[in-house]
Image 1 (cartoon, rainbow, N blue to C red):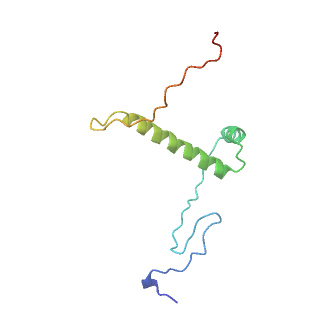
Image 2 (image 1 turned 90 degrees about the vertical axis):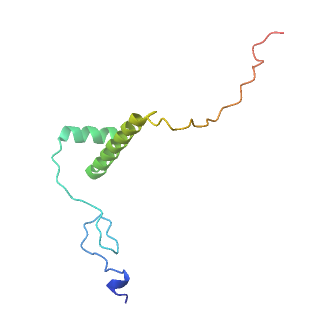
Length: 103
């Protein structure tokens, strides 16, 4: 059996269901109590199709993080004077269509 000094740790068995408890006994979950308005939760579940409150909260947090990242990116727009223009892929010019032309 490897020793603790060699980097192996005993798996943590007291983790809450749904938490990622790996061999290093680091928990990647957090339980918390939230006071949510029932009407907001019902509307959000109806619009998103989520049936579990935990999944609904995760989805909402992910969207808030995405929105914040987009605002940060937009605030940077054109703020690097040393940046070189990006090469853009251009489509070849379209050939004129012969449809509808009379001879």
